[in-house]
Length: 335
Image (cartoon, rainbow, N blue to C red; front, side, top):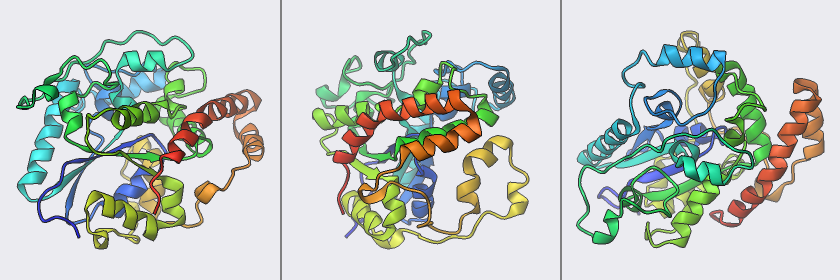
């Protein structure tokens, strides 16, 4: 039974193209939570302290258009302040904030540099401070070198961590397919090794799991399992998060075409699948319940779409990421 009082904020750590939009769609109308989505991604790419190293004409054009918005042209401290405000607002109406962000958007540049095979251009580390210091001296360690993120340790102590994973063969090709037309991404740009890695989820999972920092065991959910067994997986997730499973939706109305036609290319490429859906699709290609994907067949398909060089690079990224993926699978929530 879900508690009648607000729980600790829930933080869903994700990676692009891991079906996080599907999970949020299932939970969006839940009466006990208040979704807070992507508090840092625009700052990572387009803000005053961008941590991306992607640079090409298409990306720079998008950056200039988006920086005209004061909501995007901010630093990490401003984005964090807005996140804290959103959490307080949710608590004020008796709800639990359900935050979603891609893990790499909050990684320290030093964390990235240590976990990439190739050198990465230097990026300054944003500084973030909490508005109110905890009365617990252990929570006030602003110089926690073990914390792999730019977020304050005190803040990370205050959340319930959930990690969403998916097979890298399904994730990395999808990233290339949507990020190429919108951000000019390609296999040789300095940012793609960040896109084509699940290391950021593993590093952050290990930090939560191997320290006493959160005092809560992190939860790992596999997107392919959600699509294969939505009812049982969501039941188990809600039980662990002390949410009422009755608040989960498995069907919904698609976004009207009149709305879709007015969206930007970025929105269309990244959100067209979920916007055109009317429920959880059990037909989606997945690696659920231990099913092995035929990577050789998938690589042949990539060759036809992208050519031999790009297909080979994608396969190399997938092979390199399998250790992290399989590690996280072993930590996966069992329903």
